[in-house]
Length: 269
Ligand SMILES: [Zn+2]
Image (cartoon, rainbow, N blue to C red; front, side, top):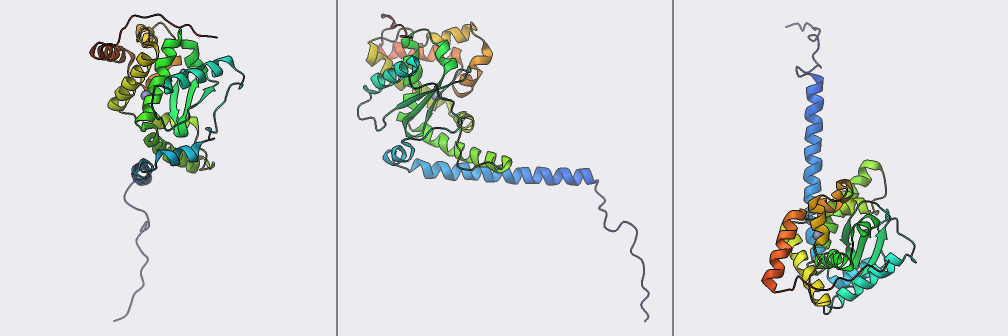
């Protein structure tokens, strides 16, 4: 039999599917793979970090600062006073494994966070919002509560993975774990973690002052909507809703028998 060569039919290399649909499927597929890898990595890093002993964490992060921190001058009076307050509160946490370091970030947006190695960051925006030492003491006590429960170390796992993905996406340095990544990661704290940190913080405030007067006054003001909502949005994204929080703290004080009356200590700046 003789072979008769034939031209292939027109458009044999063109798929019946519209190219845009194909491109869309590819993008969605890749995104799904990307997200799955990220979730898996977060899970693995969280497990790995959970088994790092506190002493190791302290040794690793002793002098570490987030690369995007814009620290205020070391002579800033607010820095000295806030560090003193952290030390005084931490004094009531017997055998705390951390030497707490406080830094003020030069941002107008109110926020506070607990970072590896015993580092507490508060923003200028938050310090502008507090009206008494008692208010600040509770915010700091709450962050100490996260160290106590080692919530921050789990958040760090998320932060590392988020940074890695930022680095891949932007071609930056993988080793740079910044405040933005940490801030994103801290949004993962559960209600239970937040309420346990509140409980620990309020206990420290009570032990220090002998009462919890004005401890949550800041959140009452925020709940009343007195202040610019834009400035507190960052703090609110990583902490419970002010209204619920006020109710819970009030109930906690009643349950524990911590007096809600007592003299207020003014800010020394
Ligand atoms: Zn918190």
